[in-house]
Length: 127
Picture (cartoon, rainbow, N blue to C red):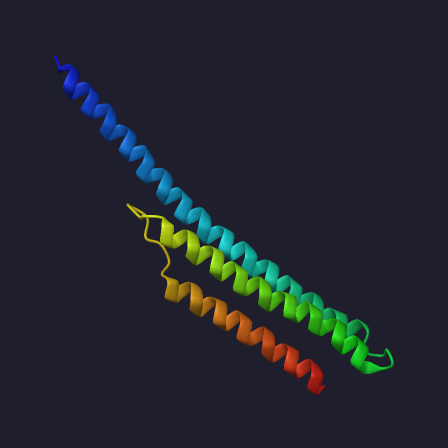
């Protein structure tokens, strides 16, 4: 028969395990949220590209390019904000069983998406 101290210790261990699992779930949810914001940024860049394609015949042409550029700028801002928020939360959490993405991975993904989107913006103005 377990003693009262053993039962209390067992409950404490179970509570700590639940907390550890909750932190791991939060880390993984953070990564899914980051991916969702990346998709939102890509959608904004796609809207900018579509904006330019649809209104290409508009005179003056700089007006269509400006409208497209606004959506491309929004995409870059979304990428940056997603990076900042994901890194902030990742820094506050402690991983237990989950293997979280590193800040370098978040930064690399963000830089690639932002760089590609900015290149798209430059190409739109050169066309």
